[in-house]
View 1 (cartoon, helix red, strand yellow):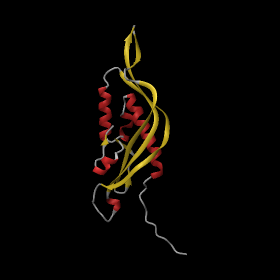
View 2 (cartoon, helix red, strand yellow):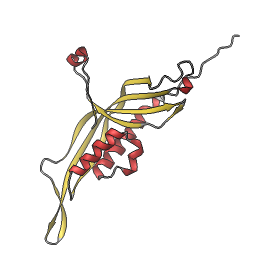
View 3 (cartoon, one colour):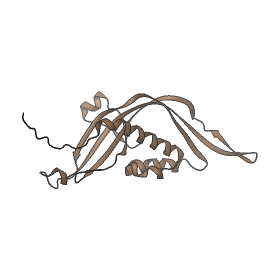
View 4 (cartoon, one colour):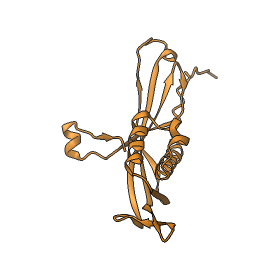
Length: 182
């Protein structure tokens, strides 16, 4: 009987990514709606954190949101998975490289968002639904981009990079894709 030498492989955690993405997605939108990103700041890349924070500030005083994920329409699905070197410190020794693992996950859920304004009426504060706000649950498809760094062979934690949209055939053929920060 022969022996095989199997080289160690990076721990891509592919099977865990949908569940990790669900958790990150839910945490991100829950804290965004509450207007407090501090508890999840370590789970958000700088650009998405700044974008969400600016949107919270833009709400103005006495305004808030209530976001609810009613149910998942489909399990999150990986649609793109890349592992790229960020540095070429030592091409031969992969444990000395800095790399990034970036994954796009399609998230399909039924959710609702209420925009609330607090106003004084007769000496007490009342919450009123803002114009354009809906209590009706709607199907939403988003493409969440999550990533983690691997520095000198040590994998970091998963973080939200942002969201993106699906490219049309025309955009793909022209080489024009679109990535946006929420």
